[in-house]
Image (cartoon, rainbow, N blue to C red):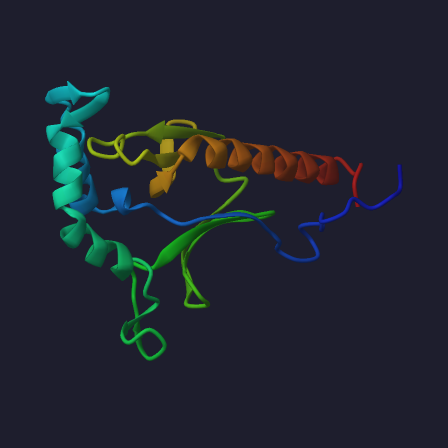
Length: 182
């Protein structure tokens, strides 16, 4: 088969984004603290609607959570377009070569790991993250933790996509080493 596949670019030519994920508020200690409060299921059911202490806390906490949420979306401080880069405004990007933590909106790379530097990915849900639902993705090479993404919303689809991209990247590297692929 010699035809090209639409949307696929060889890793040797250029780096192409496969998937982008923005971290949840559960990536912060403040967000996890509130998440532990929201998870409280003590309460009663009134006309088929559960009224719990956690749900009431979620309603009351809106003025306290919104500033943190918007702080994670503002690329530069003190203004949106001028000022210093806001480290809290970041995103996780999976490419055909690596997993990157970067400043959103062209702010630059903070960290990255090559797709051949891990062999498994574990999901760890910290206390308070289960309410959002979010979790940390731990990239491991054997028993060694090589990389961690905090507060990934719905982490399982991103984990599976990272593993599929890794399998393709490592497979092509092995074929190239054996002289099968150019």
